Amino acid sequence: MLNHMPRTVPQGPPYQSVVGSFREAFSSRQRFRTEVLAGLATSFALIPEVISFAILAGVSPAVGLFSTVVLCFVIAFTGGRPAMITGAAGATALVIAPLVASHGTDYLIVTVVLAGIIQVIFGLLGVAKLQRFITPEVMAGFVNALGIMILTAQLEHIIGADWPVWVLFAIGIAALLIFPKITAAIPAPLIAIAILTLMVVILGWRVPDVGDMGGLTGGLPEVRMPDVPWTWETFFLVLPYALGFAAVGLVESVMTGQLVDGMTMTSSNKTRESWGQGVANIAAGALAGTGGCGMIGQTMVNVEESHARTRFSSIAAGGFLLLFILSLHQVVSAIPMAALAAVMVIVSLKTISWYTVSPKGLLRLPWQHSLVMMCVFTATLATNNLAVGVVLGAAVGVALTKIAPTESGGEAA
Image (cartoon, rainbow, N blue to C red; front, side):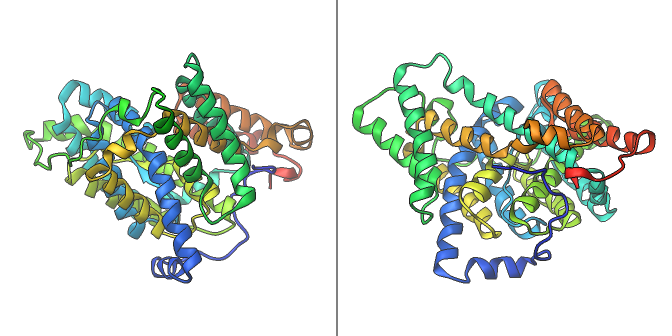
């Protein structure tokens, strides 16, 4: 768990090239196994979230899942943050949902491709350099709000559920806490998911599972050209949605990458991540997908819980997800939602920067830093949008440096 202010400038190894990252993945049998198993565990964590976000966006769950496969494969080569997971995320789903509801999925395809082009332009213009405004206190508010959002998102699977769900959830939490102390050879989330799924099958319990959310039918969505008029009217119709998609996607992706930088004490290339996300979204849109951005919860499963460190874990996650869509959809459909909820609850608790909310931390932080942190935290939870919270917090931070600069960096530096 984070017991300090999140770092924004890791004092670790320099940015690792694409070739270097893949070379590390194959450097030893142990490292390769870790990357593969991390990808497997992450693919399980992706399924319910992606299905939920696809439904939120107004598209078929299969479209969201296939889009995530494409995004994982492409970002493994184009991204700037090794081991970061990109998929059909909630923040981007919220942006495109009104467009899909009013104009249909054909306009969605055009919007995602245009958003990808805008992200590439942003990347080439160096927009990612604005990350310097994402200070440690902004990061603290960000991760604290994120932890709460991940936690509360799991409550619907637990609150009001029958007693077998509570039993499974409790056993899952126990397994996730105990098994990391016993072995690091197999990711704890994978062990917990396997145990709980076997319990459900053997005991014959009827509990909510992945299959209840729909979307795993054993086939791929149709790839087609969008049936829209190629006019300026269409362009100006989708442009606001594309700009919103591009901006929200970049903010979340850069924040996710920066969070992983601090966790692993390594550096990433934010400019590459910006245009890399754009290329990935162009590919996803061209294949009739929803597009997406960095997914923080799933990245935490990949990096923090499963110890992935290279780009190969992203390929593994996409590969396993594709396998599940095509061949093992019945097996995956049997995974109880309580198992995935347990994994994400542990992730949420490890996401929160406990130092910044402890009496000791609050007393040692300058009041300006605490105010910025609270602005990010409150705005994020109020709008249910991480990007809004970060932008507001960064703006407040810049204003405070002009109005009431701190005398020292305190613990936030």
